[in-house]
Image 1 (cartoon, rainbow, N blue to C red):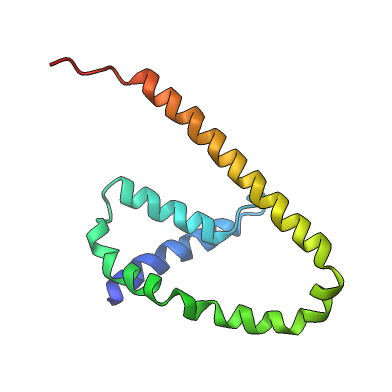
Image 2: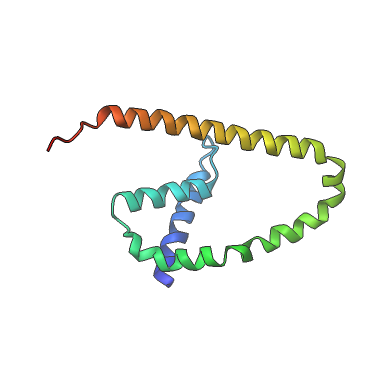
Length: 121
């Protein structure tokens, strides 16, 4: 399991180091996920290698939300005062993400279908 965590945290560390480059405005965790995706896509890291630790992390994901949830309690007064802008921003951004994701899926799916030749039997 140490090797599996090492792979995940190694990708995260590499991503955090890349994020230190001043003109790159993408968080290190995103770079780390991109690096891990690249390694999995190129078969440098086999999915079976990190599957057990990934299953463990997903199974215990709720545990990782406890600290932010407790910290959120410190800001109940601010949230109560600004509930309308927070709600509007949350709903608007959710709808925007759904719209953009759906349109991108439609675009790439149509493009993929155009480039795939039907198989003849």
